[in-house]
Amino acid sequence: MNSINYAASLEGVDAGMLSGFFEGWAKKPSAPEHLRILQGSAHVVLAVDADKHKVVGFITAVSDGVHSAFIPLLEVLPEYRGRGIGTELVKRMLHILRHYPCIDLCCDLELQPFYARLGMSPSVGMLIRDSLAPGSSRRGP
Image (cartoon, rainbow, N blue to C red; front, top):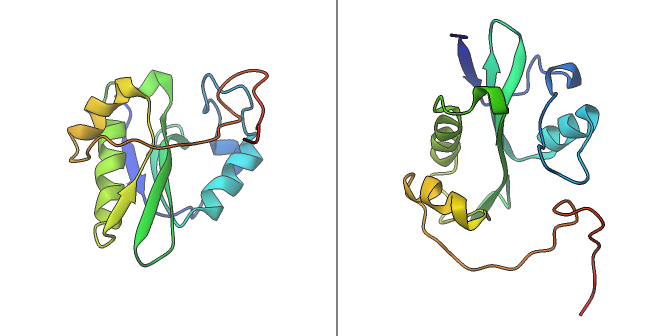
């Protein structure tokens, strides 16, 4: 089994370490765009396969720095799923965000039990997602 290291820093990470993510997205960010997403996030936690020197999972958070944080992305490469990597990434991010009174994320209904196991509660929200379906577009009211 490969050794997985976790880091809350992008030190030593380059776009070449970021391939295979955004499974099922109609508009997948390129590896350089993915790196910019990570760099633009207030907080990031990475799971890195130490043997392959490759990022195999990540979670990001954006925040106002005082009251609210939002977790927009959690991904684990398909071949690394089922090893507890996603759970560990969420636990580490929630620890980083523990001082914020408001921590939100949006997920599909089938993922709610995963997040509930980690202490989160279901909610109702609204969103615009250009990346969800081929041919989708933003529309005004």
